[in-house]
Amino acid sequence: MTNNSKEKPIPTNPRTFLLSSVQLTDIMRYLMTRPYGEVVKLMNMLTTLNQLDPSIGADFVKKTSPGVSDGKK
Image (cartoon, rainbow, N blue to C red; front, side, top):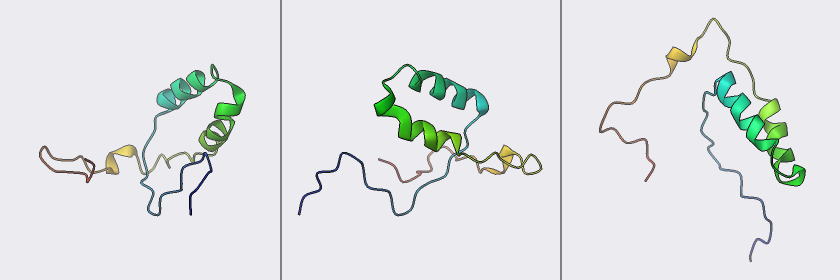
């Protein structure tokens, strides 16, 4: 059976990323230059991102060592 949907399937184990407010602003600014129908779903997803608790800080993310693979090829 083929999937004729234009949407990509949702990954079964999605990864989580940290995104700065500057990066988010740049992404939103770019998306606002594209046709509405192409970006509305993405923009809605970006507006629902949760803010990182300031008491945690972003430094809890383990830095990868050189030569250590993250599984991407």
